[in-house]
Image (cartoon, rainbow, N blue to C red; front, side):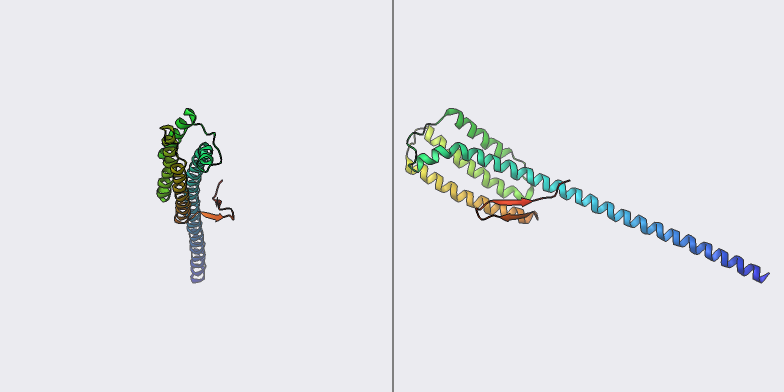
Length: 186
């Protein structure tokens, strides 16, 4: 009987060993699936954050380009390159609307300083055109406003780069000063 008992004990040990192996395998699979799920969840959050940043940068850039286009004839007037500048009331109202849109932009936390710089630029552009509409036709005063705007635009670019670095957004600055940034999408 002792041989029979040993065989039964060996079978039980093999059965327990096989059960343990299966249990450990299932635990390992569960851990691996959990880690992969967490990584995918984190990546999804990261993609959403980068999309929000991209949307903000795109919107702020569009507002700046729109207002720059509206003030370009006035800038030419200020520099003496255009003597026939006439202000269209609709343009003044559009500028006012763009300033309001800039203030309403939903900037990510890292870009709050940048949003302030964009608002300052748009406000200065509006103030320059508004001053002209009130009768301040001095080219010198207009030129000074545009010099101030140029300084603000440099500060805006610096704050954009700083914000991108804080947000860990990959970017490159091209030779012409343009900033190109990269973000993940699905």
